[in-house]
Amino acid sequence: MLKGVDIAILGLGGALAALWMALYAVGRGHAGMFKPLRGRGYPLRELYFVGYAAMGLLRYGYKSRRARRSRHAFEALYGQRYAEYYVRVTYAQCVTEALTAAVLAAVLYGLSGDAAAALVVLALGGAGWYGCATAPDRQLSRRAEEMRRDFGEVITKLALLTNTGMILREAWEETANTGQACLYAEMRRAVEDMRNGASETDA
Image 1 (cartoon, rainbow, N blue to C red):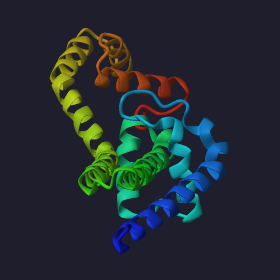
Image 2 (tube, helix red, strand yellow):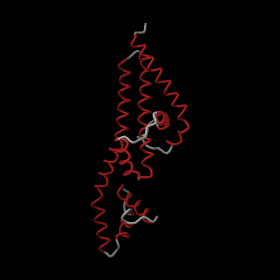
Image 3 (spheres, helix red, strand yellow):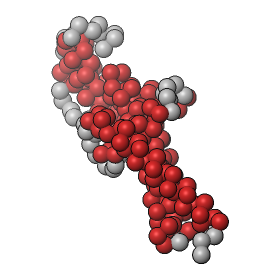
């Protein structure tokens, strides 16, 4: 015989499952938005439109302190053009993973009656939320560390080339093509910006 708490949990689980399916139906038109995502950092990317639909339903404006911080990190990582996209991806990922974990926990509890297993699934969902919410900061820290590692080498190359009579712009381009690490990639991006008309200072 079901206890009151069991009925409450199953009712909540049913409501969450219905919400998940409704968001799936509403958001599937945005599935193409997440197709470019690659890598282990996006494990449920085929379903992120569920979370994206939820954020749309809430009319979330992506203006919170966390959103601004993520936007700043993504601007440094991918450039201003793609920052807003990755902010929305991050929120869609967090909501999708947390909501899916909550539905799975309720289903697991309903099938097995094992509260401990359901709590483990919920905890994994919470960890997933925290992981994707803080991912931009971690990515930025790793990138900064990579750039710091190559900084001394880049400065030495620039100094040697300018001492041979090259102007800084030419030395910059020459140096940018001597490595594949992220600092060199950023230098090549600056070269591309200069070729497209940006000033050296802006680039």
